[in-house]
Length: 418
Image 1 (cartoon, rainbow, N blue to C red):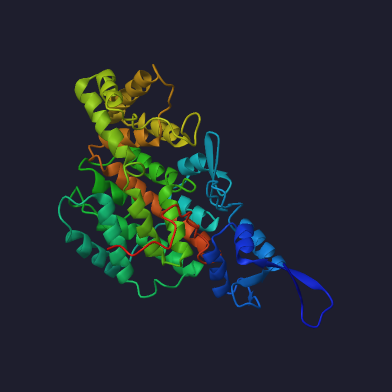
Image 2 (image 1 turned 45 degrees about the vertical axis):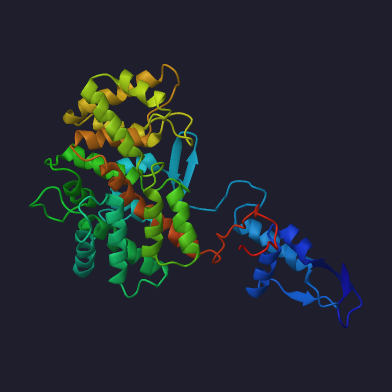
């Protein structure tokens, strides 16, 4: 369709709603949504039925959408989001271009979190929380039933902390970083301690140990826990991280974005995976042999927890680091031997490497922790990564994380149901 511009001697090509929708890769209704947001201008056709759109304007919007989504199209390809945080390449992963495994070994969890947020290392940085915020979170968590899982406790603590922060809707980088540095220690402090008489001071890993184990801590165990926190802080667009970015795209505040991540994390295919490996390890230790345990898992049609990772064709670098540290903990030897037995037994029919969930399970079994302890470590650690992704998303166009549905139901209009 061509139309002559008023007062000019040239014509411009105009598109129907259907043509504009096809060029943008969206539904016709979405084209009008772009108009309502001021991203497109429209002109009614002389007959009054439908609208037309400037072709150049539509083409520019399509190019802009492709750039902002990192090349995502409506053709069914996987979602791709531009990020400067984590890069995974073969059997290594990087935080802002730096080898993440090496960073975790050499620096504390808090230092790695700061690097992830700001691109700057702050040696000796520690996180603390206002007493009033911690008190609000503890009251909320203490009111939960005794059987409540750790992720539910952390989600309630995050919501309670939000209610205590009247400035939570300030999404500036400085404000969000302040929220992050207070929220993470609040989450830890809100968890009920296993060991009484501890002091909530020192590095975060020291404070978290008292919430995970009734055994006295030792230097090697605390170092392993701190390194695990640093290793797990981010892993590109995992399911929970994507949920956080969707929330941040809608300009939810940092507490709400973290809560979205915690909601997804509780799924058995994500944060709870180490708990499954923990229970399997206990079963192998109880029987003294991995073969019958593996056989039962396979007979039930279940995949063996703690083995293989779709992003790593070879060894999971996070598992490699943790297994090396676990070898320095004498009480971890039985669980380590059971893990080796699981890997060797499974390798008879499929060559799979141990992943970080199995390494985390060895740590939690050796520390006399419950099966849910790995999920707790994962959630506390990943909160820092979620904040990094929320910060990145706050700098993007609002509501860009809004895919279009492909309707496959009955063609309307259908008669009203009787």
